[in-house]
Length: 316
Image (cartoon, rainbow, N blue to C red; front, top):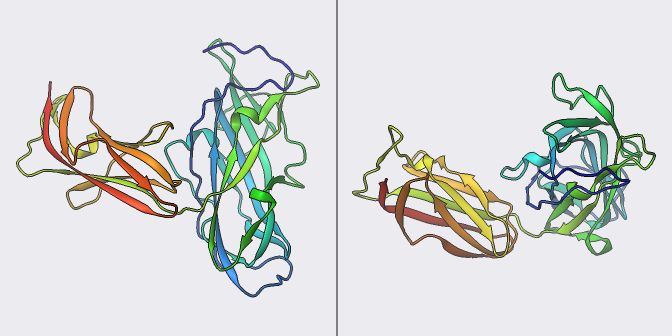
């Protein structure tokens, strides 16, 4: 790994990948002040990141609110701590299908009450920079080597403007994609203290979809599974790969559906064209019906399942 030369507000090398942070269902919510409309809609928030070469980027979000013409609506008031770098192949829940009074909303506010990053020093060692030496999100036994400054994010909150300046809710469902770019959100402290400062680069995109992609895999009639490494190959040894057109492949493990068919899913997937494929362990060759990979054109808000059946499997 290339050694970085420290400099004021230096950027970490970007390595883009998408990681969905979908949201757990909340009970119906009311705005903190009166709304001018009696109707309601529903809103979910998806968080993605584009991490750089850090070993960990952990944040604690204690409150999420939505600012609109009718006042402030609280979407989340229970602290959630997550490592942004672990979200590449998983979906963690924050807020999903929150009931939102009809109206116009212009801004999300995230109250971030703690954070730390673990930085690769380029010589085989790492250093942890934390918002506090006793930050509750630190791993057990962690040695904090410096301070991570977080200017007022625990009070006024991190303000994220919504797409086009505002989003209207009127009996429909909106999904917001919030992109927290880790690669650009942390830099060396301008004061030369050796610490780091958190200056989040965050963008919100109207992401009108709640669907996803699924691949299923079944063993065809008369197909015999070979022995690999002293054990009989199983459907769970295969993996599914979802690749957006021109994008980065997302590899997902198959899970036993209990009916002889295994499934792998990529929830909360944006509209577009995707290649869906199945891969096997090293040394295993196979054919499927239909042929793999397959191409899927996914519409906004839609779900699609591609069902592959193994027609032949062999091992070296």
